[in-house]
Length: 318
Image (cartoon, rainbow, N blue to C red; front, side, top):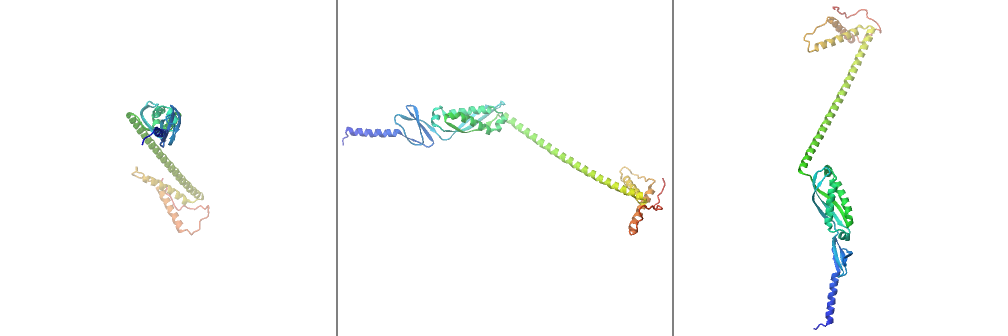
């Protein structure tokens, strides 16, 4: 079968159409955006799926990853406000929100974000003391995120997180911090011990105060009882009751002799000349007891009567 010129033309035209269709159809995977350039100028952005462009006129410019990406921040040395040198590294998370801006506003997107993050880490951490640096990581991360995100916004980038991974002071500084921590703990222990001793002394003083108060109350009650007894004896003397007088004198003599006999320094007890009076008083006490128990039913003498004779004679050897 012979092909004519027309058949060859038709075949060439079909091949050309297929080639044009192949060059004009672009498939964009999920999570990516492609920029389209016409004669070197940005015209549109291709979203995920099947897209059509003008063959031989349009071309794919930049293929931008629209998913959130992780950028490791390498270790760098930072000089703090109090002139301590520490080694710091971190990690940054970012996401492209605008493919044209990320493609045409900055050259080398990841390198730009990396240098921006490292510079701001030195700026933020260099304005803080070492103690503040070690204890305020959340504040440092928040401050870095705000600064870096604001700077990268013009590139069509959203910085979602900036985290400091490790802060490593020099070995000698770590030893000094350990000694400082130990001294602080010893100080707190001493303070707690002093507080406990103080509390114990306060409680002991309160106990002595309470005991003294109770002793004073007991002495007061004893004095009241003594005063009451003295008042009763005085009333008996006023009535002329010689038995009450003898009882009172005998009680005092007995107490005095008990104190003399209980002394550890006295080996010889000297009996005073008035001992016969004490014996007579004791006799009076016995008479009182016999009178109380044997004559309980007898009538009591009238008030104010004075006995005519003293049944309890006393010796006057003095």
